[in-house]
Image 1 (cartoon, rainbow, N blue to C red):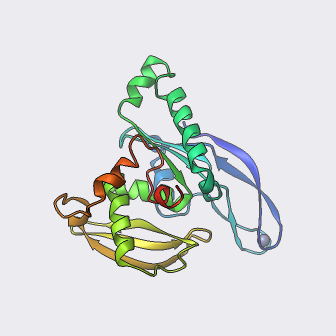
Image 2 (tube, protein in one colour; image 1 turned 135 degrees about the vertical axis):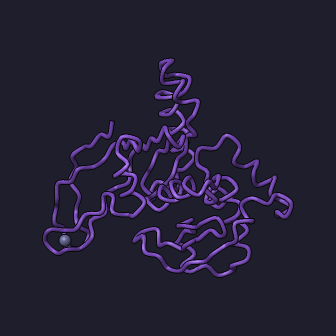
Length: 226
Ligand SMILES: [Zn+2]
């Protein structure tokens, strides 16, 4: 089931208020069109009727894809500083719906799901792209740590985030994305060996991996905001 709530969104530009349909949950198996809309960033992107400016709908929904084994709680990027509390909440929601506190039939579905917590649309999109490219998210985040070491001055360091935005068998494409506007600032390409080869990893790879043990919030920001 894909559930929608009614909500009022306000244009940051002119103050016009608009009633919008806000998704409370997305089932990607039943609604592949919604998955596609998340991937091309048209999902819940509205235009103001008065001034034409973009209206940002707050990101808050559960995303379920039993085919790809993904369960993701999406929260607004503004909740990032409280990631630890949000992670605890995400764990409880998952356990209630598909984990130890769920009915047996749901637990059975849950066994094939990997629960995750993300903040903001670009982070959700990244998990979907990674799944399509068969890139596991923990090696992906550790690869980002490596990239950041090689790129000493990322664009708008305080307001931007590095996200996987595409790729193929040979290379992964990353983009620096402005967290607030979701605009792409710049891009870079990394050969695919980086996320597969375990012989040539930084010395502290294992130490870093340990910080993600049992984590639902698998994002390098976890290391920065610790
Ligand atoms: Zn407006």
